Length: 507
Image (cartoon, rainbow, N blue to C red; front, side, top):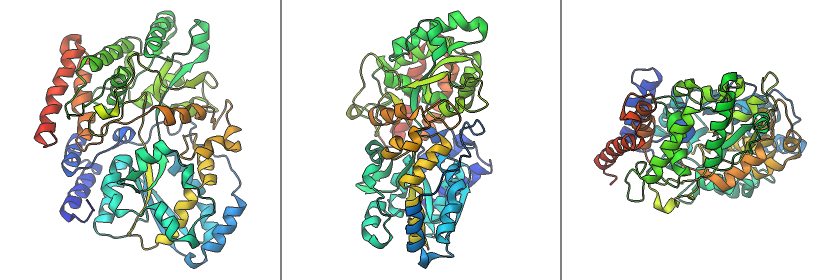
């Protein structure tokens, strides 16, 4: 469906503006978005009303790298008709966007094209993009698109692969679309056979551990859920008196971060959130086992875990409170920052695996993909309503080029979208302990290619994963309800969710 449905788009934009001004609650905003058919993907749900986590922890670097001379020469030549043009891009503060904002002056110097990057909270990104496409205004030339918005915006963006073919005079030499990781293209960028944008950001779960603590206690790095559980119990028993626990969790009651932890536990046990018939399945045998294991982990985590989101979980690793964490790869570079108390002590591996294999995606519901590595990503889209499409297209190619993706990676420490970036000599040279480290990226690439999991792709999921699931889980883990019974908690969640799914007409 295109964004020509004026009333629907007014509803979305008004709701987003109301939430941004705090005129409505997050719960009400997500309910309205579900009614309008707009969802939010894994990582970005928790960013509503907040900023990207871990800023100010040494993740974004200030290293200077020389601009590619051949690219600069090409830009100077091809951009002559567009000199003096101004293009605008709106995004939340993703690592690549923050670094790109630092580098954009190089593009302007080479082309004479001014670039304004407007960095705002996620709900404002949605409101601005919705208003823009609703009226076909062309106020913004490029859009940041959460992966779960792609279906909604696909009719309003230009397929970059096709445009590259249609505009050979503007096609950047050696751009190489085949260089983008196929799982990212399939999982983030493509809708109904068309590229709605180019993959731009991909936080993903990995397992990270303090090598000094594991060596001290003769523990091998965990590769399975059983190994992980045994290790955290042993470490807590041995180190609790020193202020260290086996693990640290993002288990804040009622927060999306708790949902992220929980979904991974369900997948780890061979379960899924929904079955292919659309029924909630977190209360089946696999789902209950996963939650029971999580409760065991919680006993071996700092007490503040039940009031912590990802920021708190990162801090547990930074302060020496936790020894093993299964969570976002974006944690890792900050632990190696210049002022870090744990610099060089953390290592990373592919996410732990459960004992029963994975439930096939064909047996899950609503596009859910069970796997070992929970992910959340985004794409960069080119607006078909832009008044300066060709100038914006030059910037988009530059921003997503091999050279700039490498330099964004070096400046931000995040996982790049291009396969070649992982092997670039500049990136490989930073695979050492220290600020701007990339030593975690080989593991991240393996995780993307082999372990990438995705939550259900349904508008109602935004509400479920911020309200029903973490609220009821919070009651369980804080002892407010369910008398410690994982099964009772999951049965209640199933009752709440199945009723709403049925009411929506999805069953």
